[in-house]
Image 1 (cartoon, rainbow, N blue to C red):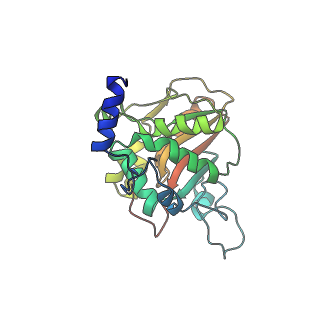
Image 2: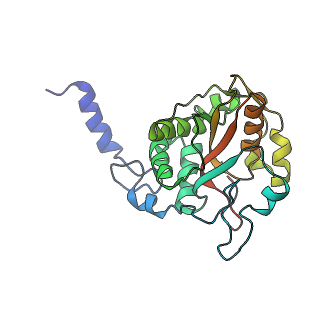
Image 3: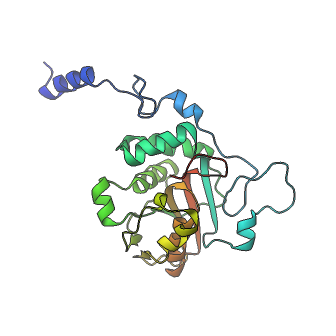
Length: 241
């Protein structure tokens, strides 16, 4: 005879049948094939440093104007897809609606579209302040870093960085204020001298947060830092996350 837990699982499946966390379609996978297919990957050409998609008709420099005038502290950044449509919805559900199960399928999809300029030795998620993480119940970047680490076979060290100030969410600020908002709020807890570190976040918007993480890692001796995100905001795309 089935145990009580099996019976309860059956009852719950009838009352709450499995659905896609993005489009709510009845099906077994947490991310359905239709939604996954609707994600728009980022391809060439792109800025060699920050990964910004470039105009395919343009010729000449392989760096965007901002990286030429104000190079970031990370050595390179790459995002898997454009922050719009189904991918934007997936990240919002993952980040704000408790759909933690999306971490694995998002990471799996990202792995197939991320072409990394160099391979990190370890992955480090962008940390939340402890108060915000307690309120949300999880750090979405930590879940992504763990999932990507499993995809690539790269260890994830979630305790490398600490966020020392509970600053206002970046999404509440205009682009011009985001850099100031996160200036100096990350500190490295471990010596990463000579290491190649991948910093993982959900969305690259202005790059301010990832840049501050890179600065903290470089101060702690990191040889190179690669910023890795599932999605990237671009001009003409959807609103900032």
